[in-house]
Length: 412
Image (cartoon, rainbow, N blue to C red; front, side, top):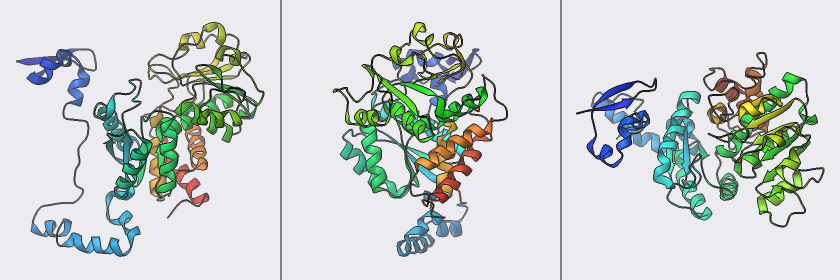
């Protein structure tokens, strides 16, 4: 019996015999092309050397491999030259904050982690291995990743819920001598800064003159605030569910207290709508809906980056009534703020020079390089490159490698 599926063009096709167990348990799977694509997983492991005969085997495995092992034992730095370490990243999650799905656990997170791994390879030439961990305590997560780390040249933390993600990353950075990068924080921040740089260039504004309001004080919101301040934006206000994050609030977590110390220089208070009055930039990384009446109070020629996915905080058609530049997290509108524009190139550059960590300067360099890719092609519909622009990863990688050398964290 043939199964019918809807292919990516929306056509009804046949895909051969159905898998009885899958379609019995998930009847809708036979009509969903995503299930057909994911069958058996989205990645595999292949060797890079021939195994044609006994001579090949004796070099790839015993006895030849022993000579290489002994050399690495004597000079540990050789592990980068004679294993996959220098070109391979672990994509690590606990499944607690997966995309828009929330806490679905490590097993259910694997399709996303596989997807992230193939994005690393496709867009940055970096090999990546999905690692879904069945533990939640910060101590357990940190200790487990530390013990896995000798196999990898970098650690990409993925979909770990806030506020634990901040502590996990901080402690891993302290303990490991390889790049540790929480993409939900820093990948989003790099791409947001790149888009904002180009939006400002398009209308002849300087970053320092912009008043920015960020909706969301989780992983992405905190990282965006920090990178914007590092890039020269002087006035950043962050809002959470209870309104403006300010020093006079007594309900703040430790992370938000630290955020209050470095943002909101005018001491604003009140709701998100209050903060938006007269603001130049809205950055949404929280979900929910911002009323059109609040958007209408922003400064003339504002920028609206409503990045919740699939439902932006401000619908692009509404935002376009008031904003000079509109960006979203979706691929079906212009100016998609997509992390794939950042993390493959950032890791490619860091691995290229065997960086010991990813610094703030490397992230700023990545954002500037990303913005520069389309600096001569700017329009309200193009302040950021397409994820399929072949110029992106090489430009970001080169900038990150140069910054790593300049900041003294490169080994070569």
